[in-house]
Amino acid sequence: MKKTLILSALGALALAQAARAETPLTLGFLTARSGPFVSLSRANPIAVDIAVEQINAKGGINGHPLRIVPFDTAGDARQAALGTRHLAEDEKALAIIGPFSSSEVRTAFPAGDRLGIAQMAIASSAPGLARPFRFAFRNTTDESVVISRVLDVIAEKKLPAATGAAAYATDDIVSKSIGTTVLPAQFASHGIILKGTVSFQLAAFDLASQVSQLAVMHPDLVGLGTPPDTVLTLAKEMNRQGIQARIIGGTTVADPQLPARMAGIPAHLTIGTTFFQHSSPEAEAFTQAFAAKAKAAGLERTVPNQMDAVAYDIVYLYATAMRQATTSGAPDRLAQERDAIRNQLSHLHDVPALEGNISVNADHDTLKPVYIMDMQNGAWTLLGTRRP
Image (cartoon, rainbow, N blue to C red; front, side, top):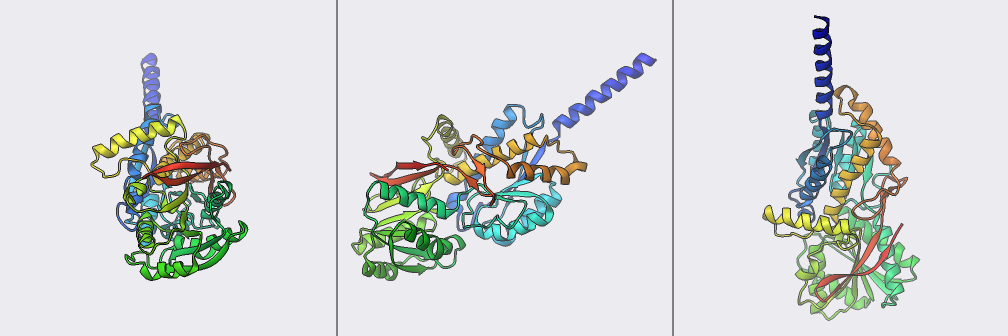
């Protein structure tokens, strides 16, 4: 009888331990399947899936499988705040991947801070947006840093850069910040004379008036901080009016398909990005895995962009933080484990990642390599690399 009781107790203990080990660690995912940046965000879930599959195939995190719960914000700031509350309160997520853009960050970060749950944005790069919050992080590099690196390489290559102009969208947070603050400051620090600025609405399809103003300025460089579609519109009009200035930009322009989309338009375009598919064997393997999944999903774009790589790396940054925090997923420890993850994230340094080694700075942004790409012969060509 005594032996039977002991065996039963041991069996119950083993079952309890197995159940604890199988408790999934839940990450929320604020994704944008539609909206103004959908060309950059639509495939982010594929990158997240690849990372989760890899982690779970190797035993998960602390013996626990990783689980993703998505919430589609449609790129809307109000939905981003609503999604943050849903993932934190209803889904009991330990942390959140996303949101995507700076406009979403402005509502989601305050909500996440009040709820005590870490968020890590994918594409928000307007300066300083995570700084006021304890639980807010961005796996992005400040656009001022990226554009500074672009101008460094342009100077190193001795490309024409005596004068510059800024073009920006007045109805987009990042674009307006780049056009009114980042570009003027970076031109000044690099000894480039700012000849003037032009502005427009993000959805504008006719930039003839703005380009006519640029023609009067006759700049060597036209700095731009918009999604890729605006670059295409601007380049077409500049070509029509015979302006041969070099267009420069940061991560907002980092579309792997942009050179192909600009085929037949004689334009000079140089940008900064934090992902280059040939930067390492890991980056090349990810590119192949992404292409296979994107093709199977019927997506038009099968080449990963910077934001796909960022989303993939966010999963691994959370995995690193959860391992270091010995996260268990126990419901009665949710608040403590969320805070422990936040604490570990804030101290991450030189973590090997797809984009290159990543560190988190005092502003809760990430420091990582910037790859300066130049459009040549219908493709992106690496012009230079700048490391933190």
